[in-house]
Image (cartoon, rainbow, N blue to C red; front, side, top):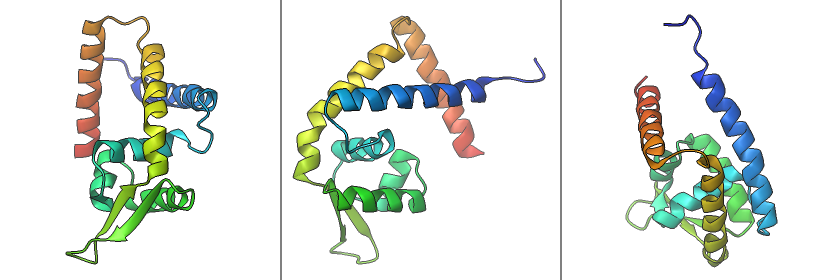
Length: 144
């Protein structure tokens, strides 16, 4: 095995370049108010709305403090609301707004376009293998 591997470095570079491309695509689709990180939060809420911050943190892999800051910005911009849980006031639930619901279709289109760019030269088998490796690496990091 080589002394120095570059997987983490390559993943970081891919993340940086992909974010720039994704931001540009969002602009092209008229979505100028969101950055990719905020979109990730909304995407998780489009899958399951009205969830506690703790659950949203797990879904997005964002720390609660980072997530709270981002939620404040999204709430101020009218993309979501935060409310105390009726059964337990210590729990804050996050719910998307109508503004977010109207944006969902466009955002999903941009995501599909980005996926096409991302996997352009890969076969279905390549993609399955690649995503399997990434899941294993993610689990390694979560368990570390």
